[in-house]
Length: 125
Image (cartoon, rainbow, N blue to C red; front, side, top):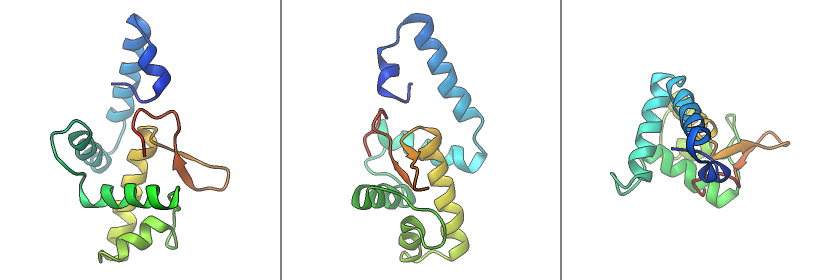
């Protein structure tokens, strides 16, 4: 598994090194973030037909707004509060979801301090 479009062109040892790098990123994640990553992999691989509720809301916000803003006034947090999740749950689940999307290079931090889709990602947001 590789994370960005340019990585898909790699061959042999270079591809193996990039795949090892991806596995190291996943191995370094906390348990809760790994769990979110696992749920995302299940969806992307077709093992499940839809992402879990939190990931779906994050991807919907990203598609609708073109960004994910953090903090208590951020679009993902406000969306999760509307479920309704408690502020603490929304904060925690939102942060873990942002971390997965960032570590898997699906989003990048913009100069404005907001997360935007990574145009080079293997997964389109």
